[in-house]
Structures are given as C-alpha cells and as structure tokens.
Image (cartoon, rainbow, N blue to C red; front, side, top):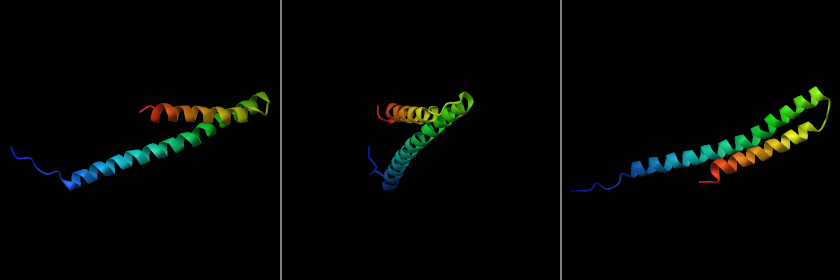
Length: 79
C-alpha cells in the first residue's frame, strides 16, 4: 500500500483553524472582562437608585470582575 505525502495545504488550513480558535478565545475572554463589570455595575446602579444607597455600584463592578475572572479561569484555565 502506498502512502501519500501530507498535503501542505491541509496543514496550513489546520494551522489557520487552530489560530482562529485561539483568537476567538482571546476575544471572548476580553468580552467577559468588559461585560461582567458592566452588567453587575449596572445592576448595582439600578439598586442604588431604587434603594437610595451609593455603594452598590462599586460592589457590582467588583463582583462582576470577580465572576468574569472565575468564568475565564473555569472555561479556559482547566484544559
């Protein structure tokens, strides 16, 4: 049985696909870092306005960052 040499185009396509997945993962992690504090900071702002306090925005931003970092660690750091 005769084996065919590996096609360089196939190797380039696999490398391009792998690099694309890594870039997508990096952008997804950045999106988590931005959206977490924004969402939870926004919820804190709404609660501040509703309850009449002024400290829940900071708590929401910090909680959003902590949850974002945990999500990134859980999703990408355990491979």
